[in-house]
Length: 349
Image (cartoon, rainbow, N blue to C red; front, top):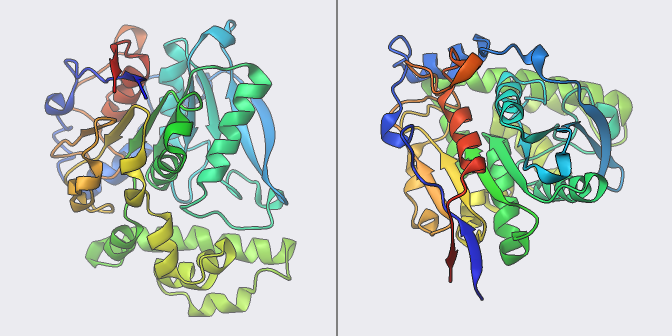
């Protein structure tokens, strides 16, 4: 079967052109500091979006904010998915949304289940394998707004989810996803969880655990028959949490089975839509060895792999932007928008 494939043409701001901020050569500084630095355009400048509650499964809905251009049916759309314990308000989601809107794209900011103040909208937890939720939201955007060209971008755990969605669908993703963009995706959950439990990375693990355990306490009030807060005393690591809460709630049984079945590395070779993966070689959370797998060697996947960048940081020494956005140095976000707007198309068998 013949397909029309959109290939990403590496422009002057491609992989080899990324120059990290000179004060952020440490992978940990590059991971942490950019989350506190405002973009050139403050997130509050993102136009007010329509608040949509979208049912993704029986008993579960997610909150998505939709920002439309005046001629939205004729414009490409970027659906953005946050990472572990993030939300649609995360600085990366807002920053990428602003850039896409400035290039006349529609934007949708999706909250995973229970995120963004939506604990009451789902009787489950969220997990890294919930690709069906992204598919359901994309189909809703197509039907409700008449959007035809929808790209999906995801950070970290969100990146794993969207890659898994595209791989699961295979040929059926053509016509649903115009393209996939994953930034620092945790494509091998086993490796990422093991990394979080080593050395200084425990700082990140403790940060994530605070959010996850807080959710269990709140969910136990909303759904006391499903969540036993007493089991939290057994949780010391992310793997403990997944073993006791995430995996059983998601129907995986235990953490090891969850990681094996939810990791997108097992689905990437089935992807049949243009896909961009951005991963730094010094990522302290997602081991770069994951991206050396032969499973990524497919003509549908472009990997940009700078030496530096930390985990979803990618704050450059110079601006990648033009116009009034000149001060914005968030390289990966600019690369995603460039990928979506790339018009270099050609046929592929």
